[in-house]
Image (tube, rainbow, N blue to C red; front, side):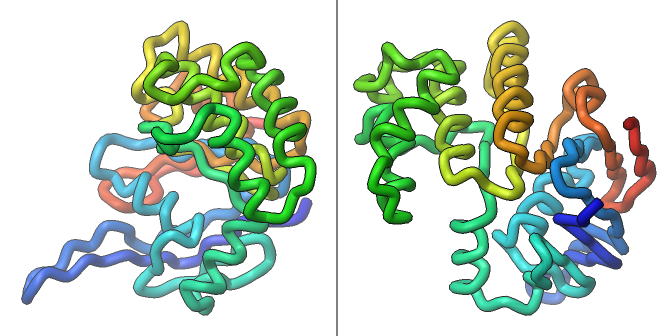
Amino acid sequence: MVKILNVKNLEKTYFSGSKSLNILKDISFSVEAQETFAIVGPSGSGKTTLLGLCAGLDRPNSGVLELCGTDISKLSEDQRAKLRNEKVGFIFQDFQLLPTLTALENVAVPLELQGDKKAIVNATSLLEKVGLGNRLDHYPSQLSGGEQQRVALARAFSNKPDILFADEPTGNLDTETGDKVINLLFDLNKEIGTTLVIVTHNIELAQKTNHILKLKGGSVVENIKLT
């Protein structure tokens, strides 16, 4: 299988004055195309930092990080932004919807910015798939947490990304709502053929994936392929 994400000897250290904090230490792993992959570990283990590096939102201090066949550690910020726009989707714990836009607009605007002439039609179709066909004109403040995350799901899949990064996608949801969102996430992922990388504290969620990477203290302590 093709490796869509390849990480070798990754290090991330933050500096403050004369002090340094080594967040990630010699991290190596790879993710195959269309794999579902979970990054787990206790709070402070470096999960979210690692996700941000893999998605090109931040730079490592050293190591190789290949995303969609490109060594992103060597790209400029503009080049990384272009790669993210074309190849990458995101889902965040706090939804990150634009409060002044309706559900439909939150999904359609990114498509319009990419020149999609059927942005409204395609956004409507995605929202119908996540069960929000009757909530198109509602603003985020008029939607429940679960509904907001379903809008975020539709938006994340709107550009049919090669890889989607989800950071604690059920962290702000109750168990029942979270389960519904996860089922939708996996269903859409399978339908579109995206690679899914999830950071989660939820072991049950992690066990739904093909592959689990466990961090502790900024280091890999387990790398288990389940299927």
